[in-house]
Length: 371
Image (cartoon, rainbow, N blue to C red; front, top):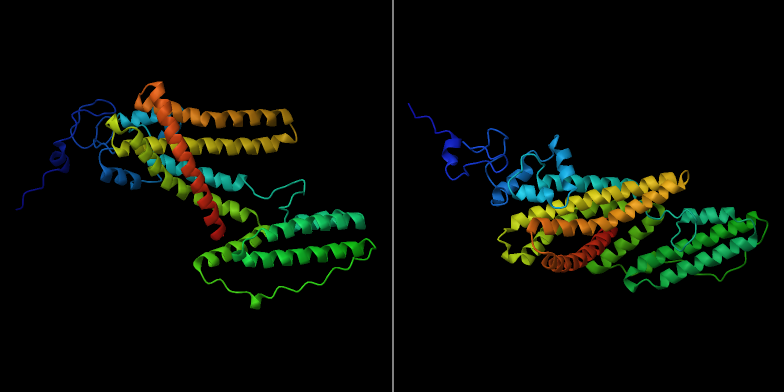
């Protein structure tokens, strides 16, 4: 008869810490029998950190409320986690993913591009042009609207680079459609449309087809730009759908900047990654608050303007609190003096701001391609 295998907790007990880092209870295996925290330190083992991310990834319980309350205090949650008090809180990667997805899901509902209630400006859609022409009461007003819009469109067309020839053709068609709508409105008002010089219709067959991948991407962007005239929210949804991916790529970069700034701190990269994850989790939470404040301000601006103004002041204060929070978090976690903290914070902030700006431009261009 084969001997029974030795229980796993006896085999791995050797080398474990003697007391739980969270509640100081004596350990007798892989888990604390008092609070249930695992004996492994995830910031010291990359494999265990990956395992923690994928283990019950979307499982959230009552710990989320305690985690969010702790997150609101700069650096408190990150410091607790790094010091071993992990059982009461949601894991940093899980918290960041949930808040990131929630924030940009709400953003799709709140943010809309192309909403111009006054009906003015060069970026009007054809629907807005229709309304302005239909609301015109004299032939002179129709001609004024026609001249202004045609001038704007022709100026925009001339500014396009040569490889965006499909966009030029699309603008020619838009100008022709505008003339037809204006002529119809003039006739409806009892006038006679003024004759215009005949223009050759765009010949799609004689246009050189894009050959290089840059030209193909440019042509696709031009076609998508035409689609935005009918549905401006396409770009909003595509952009916000790409932002979480950009943030996932930027979080490890931010952790690398922390690692470089604190080379002599003795902390490993995964510890800096914990700080980066909690920092971005707070930023997602703050952006969520900004969008909700903006939505409430829009709802109350018509009925209670004073409340809407108060919402605007709160939103401004929240914008100012974001960098202040990150500064205080860095000061608390790393424990340096104010001068050293300010110098490191300024250096990290400058480099990371440039990287975020570049990432935003790349995401915007990719969103225009992926529509």
